[in-house]
Amino acid sequence: MTATALPRRLLDEVLSGRGIWPAVPAVVVLTVVAVIPFCILLSLGFSDITVSRGVIVSQTFSLRHLATALSDPLYQITFQRSLTLALSTTALCVLLGFPVAYLFLIGNAWVRRIILVLTIAPILTSGIVRTYSWIVILGGRGVVNSLLIDLGVISAPLRIINTQWAVIIGMVQVHLPIMILPLIAVMSRHDRRLDEASANLGASRLGTLRHVILPLSIGGLGTGAALVFTLSYTTFVVPQLLGGGNYLNAATMIYEQIVYSLEWSKGAVTALLLMLSCLSVLAVITWLTNLGTRWTRASQR
Image 1 (tube, rainbow, N blue to C red):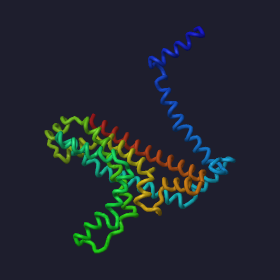
Image 2 (tube, helix red, strand yellow):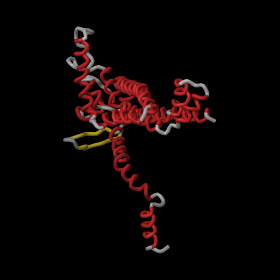
Image 3 (cartoon, helix red, strand yellow):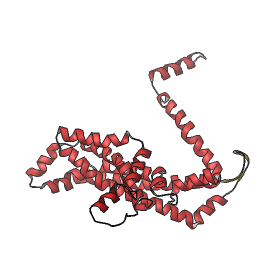
Image 4 (cartoon, one colour):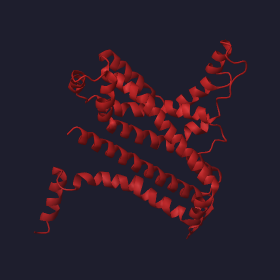
């Protein structure tokens, strides 16, 4: 092959989309926005650094910050709180999202349009705006307390805001559409003839839901649960606004360590632990989803 034939062949492959060339732009973008920042994060987490006027002037390798994070009870409590909050939010989104998706499946065209509008419309609004609206609703003089006082149910306002219950309510409302949309996408491909066959065999509507619709929706449940858990586990805005300044989860801990304390190494280690723990739970969700889909395929044979 001549020296001029090789560049011409490479150019032909790029223009024709053959080989690995179509993936090159994506690899470059992922390297710039993910791989390089991740390497910088690792370098900060496993080193002692000296910062002067926002610039690193010295950096030496050290495992001190990682050892401190793994042994500090504050880290354990914070990550346990973050995990509990994320799992609770995911479970509530599953319980509330599946009936909405099922109503979309059995509803007529108008019901489906209304459900889609009500599901997509909140996503078009900023999460900060939706979180501030819950401050108005759940505050001491908010809608909930005012209504309960007017009805005579309570005599003094309840303390709802700046509690974990307020954080869970806000998290569920913000992330519920992320659970509903994958379920709707899966149920939209549902073959209604399976429901008719189940009814002809004597199954009730509840039995059809349990033995036909629910097993076929496991893929959507797994996808929605993974998305909701990831967003809930790494969220910052909702716990910061609805939980008050004293509510500490992993994301707010990273923010305080990097922005307020300027402890970049500690923040990098905390971010690394947050990412690894999140990936571990996602691996479990993926395994359970694959296990459920394999069981469904095996039971249908």
